Image (cartoon, rainbow, N blue to C red):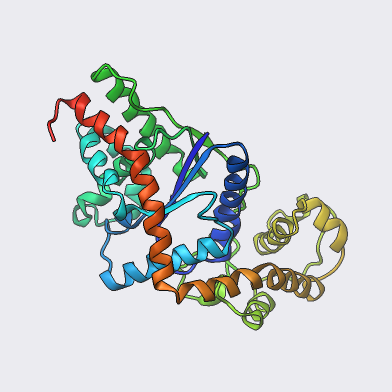
Length: 335
């Protein structure tokens, strides 16, 4: 197996990122390394520039995200960790694939409609065609498997469509059609202030999320003040219907403790949040403390982080080069 996945360098990771994606990345990394496969994780800085960014902030966020991933368990000895911009083959292949991708396919991409909102005409061309860059991100490595959430399945299907059309049009077997990995334990972590909205860095209230850089006291205070309801915890998951904030806190406890929601409710059935919240806060603090400590150590070592990213990029360039050469050759282009 060759697994590839990326994440935009938007600054500090929060609990939703960690439990929803990064923890599964670490598990896949370890399992795939043990099986002799390749696992590549990249910081999607080329995707980040499809909207306006301050250059100095983007550079800092890229290093900070690398530090957070390593602190969370991504091991540069087991995985290939790099940022896109250090591997020009991503951008080169994306341009080549723009000749194969079709406008009709782009028009069906729901995330562009969501991200451009009412200002579709004012959105960048990059934002419109960034699914082609996403296709290039995986096709450049002859990737076999890509971990995706429900919101990314459409983009992986597009990558398969582009690969199939390119291979057919130019009578080649250059590109592998990647299959999705839907992590069985992927957690959808919601806001601490609104159980119907995802935990997000863009929420103006810092109390809505647990940042991986939060100290022990801050974590405890955020859980203490998290929105709940006055009812005690039920005996079964069915009793959480219509109680989004209660469901969210129970789900967080379940994922952190590697238990099912049913098992958590067996322990806390009939108890109120006055008893449950301190238990959840303690579990969060114990889980996140070593990650935070490692993150704070790493984030100030700019030279060390750049060294890790460059070493990863060197390995990625080696894997990408024959595929990019094959694409140029298939198209009849001379370099």
